[in-house]
Image (cartoon, rainbow over all chains, first blue to last red):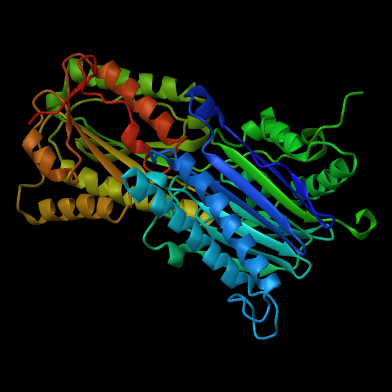
Length: 271
Length: 233
């Protein structure tokens, strides 16, 4: 599990815990998350390796690590050499959607390489992926498959990226699919916090009302506020999220693995 | 007072469960008379009791029953497991299997439309056909036969549902194999293994109701030495 991270202006924390079905079947958790904080940017990713894929859990771990590394590399390179960065717009700002797209491509390349090295089909590493980059300009999320990304700004919560559009609840698009570029959805919005949840716990962040998906603020708002407070108090935010995901009420949502990863920009008073 | 935990601070909503429409298409023709219909009724009771004891299945499985014998009848429309009561089936009549399959495909599509209308997430529906004979309302190559083949094979190919055929006793396995979607070999019930078959069905539905993509292939194999089924080549 990545350590929770802070860099004056940001905190990133999260946890992946095995679902009841995995515990019962002695199967390890096949979700993963990763994060990195750079000056001015927080990068966070979560993935859900498919249980039906032989190495879905490995796929999830490889993808979150390589996506975050690729996005961080692009931002660092742009900072070091702003006039030559491939992901810089004409106005000199980072082209975050382009960085996300190439980070996801990098994540898939890492899976292809791993599958070739091991001599097994790419589909053995089938996994979903979500990667978000938070900056003072807002948040941008790239997403393939189920799971959900929610953003918050001054206590107002919005759905940034909904679960992928497979017809059936137990089927989802994956990064290892040949149509991954078509399945990649990129969404942006103003935010001071971003939350990524895999499908095991997405039911805590979003609810259906009359057919429409809406964010569930009574979960999100106190969570973000408490994590910021816990951080100030020096508590282990990763451990707190892990305890939350392992609680009976969360386990009632689903017997699948659960990952909740949170990135937030500290309010001025905490800088 | 202990340290404040996130689970005491945040409001965790009650779970909203995706639904799995499952339909049993059951042969109640005259040839099912006697022990077979009694065991089928007993099996339905076992299936109902088992699924009612599974917390997730109770919340997710919607079960319907179509019979074919004295006509084709939707004897139980889709009903959640907590309210489902198994029908008491009586044998009689011919074997209008073709019409029953088409009816199952129709009601499954209707159910999915209903899920979409009310905004409920859902799994791919399951259709289980159980028969001890062969259709009397269609012959291989006629228009009804082709309509049924198109509906079943096309439906699976277009991922509209998953279809399984289970044969009993004198079931015409070669016809069942042709009706079944490519790659879905029909299973034959071993003698006196009715209860085991319905226990398998219940376990399978429990797994489906708690599944992710592809896991239907990991269902317990019913054709082992202790299993209830045979693959007849």
